[in-house]
Image (cartoon, rainbow, N blue to C red):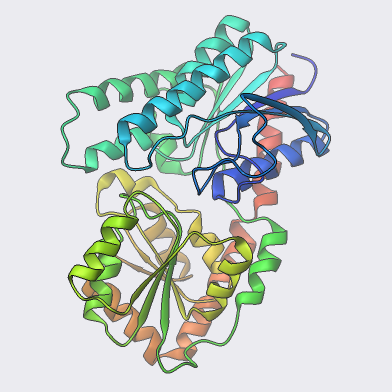
Amino acid sequence: MTDKKIVFIASHYYPETGAPAKRIFDATKYLSDNGWKVTVFTLAPHYPENKIHKGYDRGLYDKRIENGFEVIRVRPWMVPKTSFILRMLSETLFAFQAAIFIFLKRKSLIYSTSPYMFLGPIPLIAAKIKGSKFVWEVRDLTWEYAKTTSKKTYGLVSLIEKIMKWTASTSDGLVTATEGILKYFKNKPNLKEVIYNGVATENVNLFKIANAPIFKKERPMALYAGIVGYAQNLITFLETARINRNYDFFIVGDGPEKSYLEEYALTHNINNIFFEGYMPQADLLQMYKKADVLVAMLKDDPTYAVAQPSKLWEYMCTGKPVIYSGNGEAHQIISKNQCGIAIKASDPTELSEALNHLKNNVEFAEQLGKKGFDFVLENRMREKSLYKLNQLLESYLKK
């Protein structure tokens, strides 16, 4: 391969504002600016409302030029968020659509990214038949999450795990978000790299406006902003609210667990928890500005030990103190760099104590927020990650 042609296969893309969409948008723009001929194959924007955004409902296939390169969107099969089976079928359909596109496209470097797990094996097979190089980006081990539920999987998860490990070993390149995910794949291609989730400079400057004084109100505010899903185990957040009536607790976001959590709060008379739903970025910034403490969490399970939630780095850009309730890599990073408070997962008592400690030690809380901000500037800037990605991809041109 002598020319810099690359096709990005991604389930989420601009104008969606979720983390996967923003990350891939920044990557494609950066690579295009650095001489790559970029094509994006994605779904019509439909997150989080599960409804196609205005101006993008142009039928089954929409091709347009954006930022100087080609973006092709296909109509998604939108299914209920709470139906795991239908969601898997919908994701698999998009993976096959991507495979067909690869067949029809000129030979290029294919870069396929999660969170849709079947965007690994299915496009890989198409790329191999076409004779294109294939790079798989794995941000989460989503197929492992089923192990954390009590539902029977009838051996399906074990089969999928084998398929995913085969995909990693067969790909020409492998990119992961954490060291733990890279280690999970025992057999790997020669070209492999850990490229962390990061925050773009423009967003760092944007979130800085949320750095308002903390603990100035009569009732302090603890905020969780992100996906309201099974992995986040937000029942811990609710139980903390039940223990700690001195704080107001806010959940901003949507997901399959939201209805259950709302009912749980009502049933248990937890009247200091508030559900705000999904917010556009401008409104979210105002919530960050009002918050005294920002909380991220993951379930107490070895499956999540390799994760580093990207929300942590966004939180830290506000200069507010951050608490992480979870185990593994993220816990170790925060503890080592003293850029937040890391507590064990799924422990509402410890979370309540950490919140009270910050409330009673405002100067310490302010210092913690500053350390978090400095950590992002030094270690989690998206531009550094994109430079690293560009270097990795250009190494294919030398083969």
